[in-house]
Image 1 (cartoon, rainbow, N blue to C red):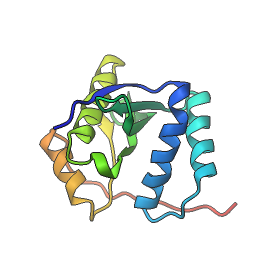
Image 2: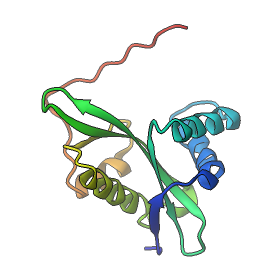
Image 3: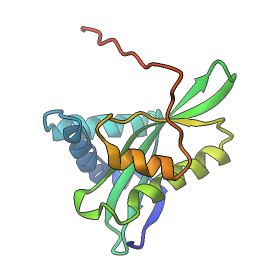
Length: 152
């Protein structure tokens, strides 16, 4: 396990987050696009549309990030977070970075009075699924998730 420190992202962190975000998108089979990644994370940060957390190693290098989007659960009539993005640099994997980011996100959500956090991951991402389940996340066995892409 490496020594990991998590914290809220600052404006100065955005270039580092953008690099990781581009790799995150590539992990999900999107074409590399550094400018799109930079613009997307910067706009979410500047417009306060998400909470971005970073994980730093002992040398102070950002080796992972997570991005949480505020939302609501109508059934529970309560605010929630959607943990949409979580990515760890390939050379920092298996060092506790993902776990640290998930625990930091949970602490933040509790502090802000969120009722729960939701996330989705690829069916093939077994390593992530194992981590989530080890931290008490439960797989939804009741609801199906649907998406519809909209043409511009």
